[in-house]
Image 1: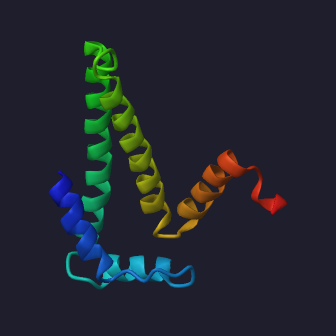
Image 2: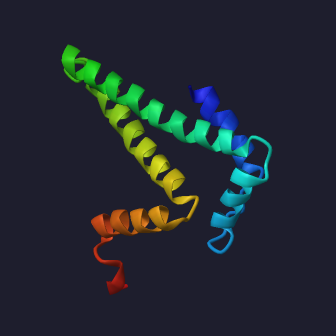
Length: 120
């Protein structure tokens, strides 16, 4: 699963333009003009969702078996830190296409952490 994410992510990066003006157009280019670009994008998107399902199942198992108790508290804390990094990475991946859903999703998440963006 992780290999799928790495390979499709690298392949998608080759055709992506990381600018606010051209990000959406580059995603459209990948979807329409790159050979099997639509398949790579959807494999990457679906792989991210599947990866989160596996992470949540792993966390549920750890809670059921009490893996957060002594002597494994430090392992649990590192796991939660990795989970936070994973959530941040997923947010960045969600925002990268810079379509309407990405833009408004970014607005909601930013307002959760730093208040209303109109106050800036």
